[in-house]
Length: 214
Length: 260
Image 1 (cartoon, each protein chain N blue to C red):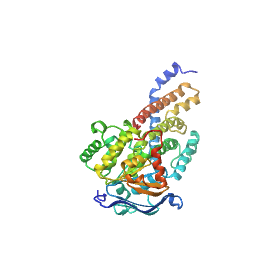
Image 2 (cartoon, each protein chain N blue to C red):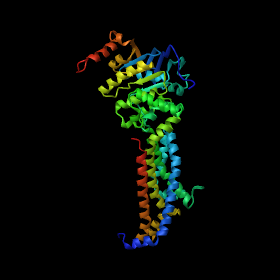
Image 3 (tube, each protein chain N blue to C red):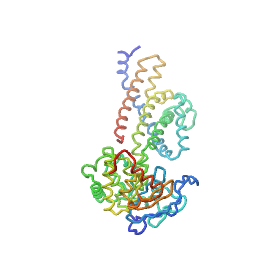
């Protein structure tokens, strides 16, 4: 069955609800991504000079990504404080998914800097802190942003699953559509989610190119 | 600048029986028993093959490396006793490929040490203009450019200007012209020689190119496998009998071209 006129009229009729769900969805994504940035970027800066910690941090972040999202949501529900039904649990799961791309790119960006530049920085008498914040970080910024972009896209997709544990968002339509075998409902959730991903990709991609040095 | 290296006469840099081995493992020596003094105003060229320890010696001077044995004394004080940050801000450093900061403009690159030392803006700007003119780059044309918008030779000029910014008495140069095409290299070597004579800096210059050594040095120090095997002013260097000197001298005569 291809989307037809009935899907369109459904969309128009329920535009207010779809809009609210989109806003909910976006809120979920923005909160989760911001928390992931706040955790992963400093952690990435911290592990650059510490190989042992780096292996552990990247390994753990990697494991989170291999857990199927529905399972991760399910696993989090019984955990006290962070678990339960609703948005908080969803945010925790989304943060865990968003960590790896940001962490990995922060590390890669910070460690992939021309050794001659770092040698010059050290020889000019820059302190390790100055080298990190004035040389490594600005040069790594576009790579870090690429990680944030990946994390955002992943989060937009995974957040649709979060409806299953009562977090709201566009997934609500999709799950309801699956249960009622209604294409209109599924599309009402899937199309805005896809659009969000495309728009986020476009704007973050532009920002990333602007921050790229050379 | 409180602890700046200044107004020091005599030997600015002195190696006292210095050895250096990687990870402090004896037997794996990169530098063995080097003693050397560099008097004020001299240009000492460290000459040697790849792996002879030239760059290691250079990095021992600004405490990027610390000696495993012996002492490296800069302005009367051993490098282990210096605050490395203070020491390095008083020593200019130029490397191959320049190592310019790609996210800084030419002016910002040159102004690096002044900005670290928190100079006033006007003073920094004046200094940047002065230095760019000194290395033959017109400030109005080049100050706002990024390193990737420059040729290799121009980048290296900026590298020299950056090293001179805070007027350090010592300049360390690690094959600064090594990556340039022969024509540009010869041009920069000639200009740099004139500049060095005019500025009166104490310079330690690393190269594997005997011709460059002969052109720039007031003294050539030849290294072989981490040891000094010959020290001589350029006019006497080629007359030395040491086999490594002969090997380098032979490098002048081989090659397809006719020597000038």
